[in-house]
Length: 134
Image 1 (cartoon, rainbow, N blue to C red):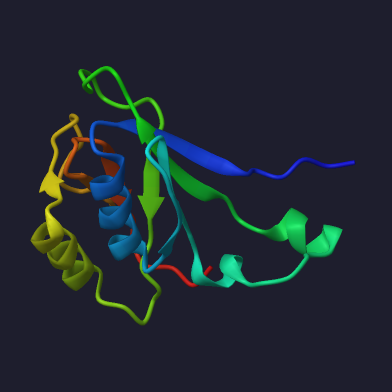
Image 2 (cartoon, rainbow, N blue to C red):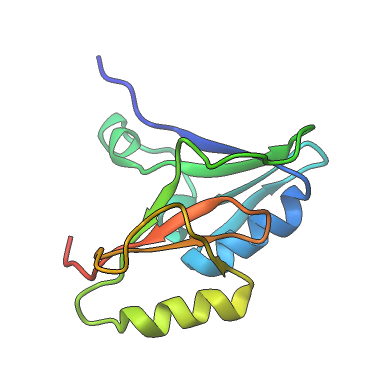
C-alpha cells in the first residue's frame, strides 16, 4: 500500500481571488469553487472517468485555497518552488509573475543564488528556480 500526496492547502483571505491568480500562474484550472474552498488542478488531472490505482498514485497534488481567519504575519515555513523549462526564458517568466501581481521579497537571500524569491498577492513566498528539464 502507498499513499499519494493529495493536496496542498493554503489558508487565505480571498480564496477565489488567490486560487484564480495561482491557476493563471501555473496554467491550471479551477476544478471546485464553493463558499469554503476553491481547488485548482493541472489540466491533465481533470480528465473524466475512473482512474486506475496506478494512474491515481502518480497524479500530482491539487492546491486547495480555503478561508483563513488569521492574516499572514511571518515567513512561510513551507513554500512552492516554480521552475521554467530549459527552453523558457526565466527572466520573462519572473516579469510575467510581477505583472500578475507578485512582488519581490527579501528573506535574507543573497544576490548570487540561482533562485528568485517572490510573494503572491497575499504575501505567501514562493521561489522561481533556475531552468531545468525535469
